[in-house]
Length: 71
Image (cartoon, rainbow, N blue to C red):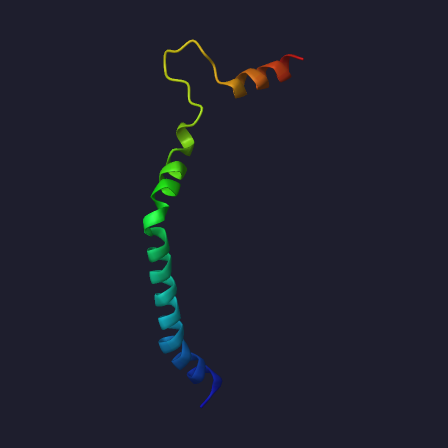
């Protein structure tokens, strides 16, 4: 057998099995029971330190950048 045929047989069987097991492992890890709070915290990152529309306050990061530009 030549090298291509051997590598093709390995890729068709064992590598496919390894990739399938890796995929199933990632799915199980993502949906494990203890990860709900981690995913909820990560999903709320864009909403942290947000000023609601119509409020008089400005975010602290904008104040700091404006002060740096003025000095």
